[in-house]
Length: 144
Image (tube, rainbow, N blue to C red; front, side, top):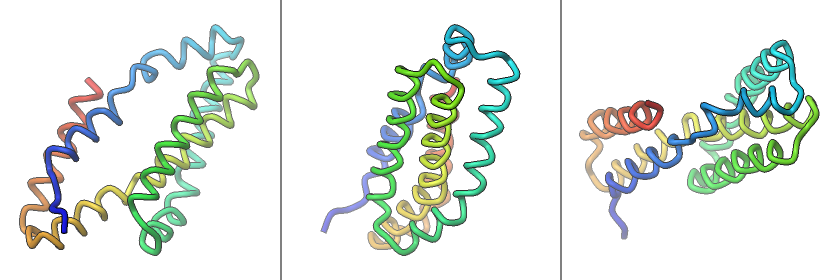
């Protein structure tokens, strides 16, 4: 049986959150002909889809393999950026944001559930709060 590796989690969280595209996607949209209003609508669509998929994704994560959910989320987020790379229309940028929103919903509670399950199976459930604190710190540090 494999034990839960905290350091692997922190590295994963840093790498998955350290994305330079965050600083440049608005510039990309403007350079590809989108107006500020279009960009605001795109971000609103992302928020709406993230909210709509949050509960179904949580139910799916509880009933299915959490590692598979995280793998699918990574593929969906990657698809977002691939679509954006080839996009010049509002609807294609919206499709990319939909992929990103669903990926975020798939990741949202799945990571915490996977961490909890692994710590519990290792008999280390008591260190969950410390682990989650470092997990959140890596997310914030990657975004700086």
